[in-house]
Amino acid sequence: MSTNITDTVRALVSDATLLVKQEVSLAKAEAEEKFEQVQTGLIAIVSGLLIAFVALLVLVEALVVALANIMPPSLAALLVGVILAVVAFFAVKKGQDNLSVKNLKPRRTMNAVREDAETLKEAV
Image (cartoon, rainbow, N blue to C red):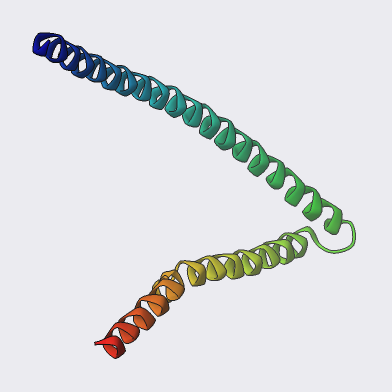
């Protein structure tokens, strides 16, 4: 009788080991598939951004040409360039502010931990 139990336990351990190995293999295959999906998505995004950048350059040039009909071309180019530089400055400044250390601190978590610590001190 103990032989049957031993054999059953061995078979169970063997099956469990095989199942874990198969699950790991499946996870690896799925991770590779997802990585390829991410890679393809990033390539599409970068391609789209490059095309959008070229389109923006063409539109800026069209704006300069249109303004050149009502003012000297050099002044039109200068005006558009200054406006774009100001917009770029504020966009970069906003991005820097969003990425500053003080804005990245997990304030709610820090407050919750502080409150928990105070509660524990009061309880002791």
